[in-house]
Image 1: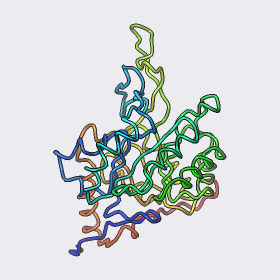
Image 2: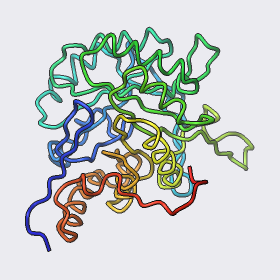
Image 3: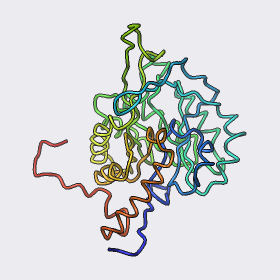
Length: 314
């Protein structure tokens, strides 16, 4: 058994993380809500909830429902807006010694540019994660992330208005996620994260009405992990930039699957609602796994998938 502490550090383009565990946007608030539960500096990083230029109330309730092996949510990206974020959140998170990544979104391409510009030069923010799973009001409600060309345009606008590494978060609700991945890579994205939630719904059979006031919502949790793993594998094979895996990760074995197919980091989302320390538990277990298997760095795990000798696997 190796007795030398393994190096769990990873790089995502210009962004360096002390370990590959991040908390996912929308499941960890602004991070500060968890500060009394454990030392946030032990995380590789945290992705704060989606931020828009102006405050946004989100959808009316009910907007969360439990499903087998997961949950549906239709929060609608409720948030305090850029100005309040800069005034109330940034001074506190800027003192952290871990990566703070801000998830940003908009309903017009210019909205993304405005949020990115407002965060330009702000100390304590390590990177931006661009949520393109939002309805584009200028295109009749079509998601920005459903069209590779539009996704690339959003990426370009954010890069033009930002001085920070840009990660683009992909939607799984597309015909071929590889096309969108190639689009944002060609536009200059530093990294890609995937997947965002799958679209789903639930019905109240007594009242014969949708359970969610918004009718549909985003499905997350262990139920989507196989889909997420497959799409991460596809994207890793398609692009040259780093990939962050997201989707139903609850323990170190789940995380290892994503690392083995090529993800350089992972995000823990829905599991935070069950155990807020999930990401830290995974870090501890990952370190133990490396010690027990004589692994000295994450590079000995990432992208080590051995495929069978078939030509029809994608």
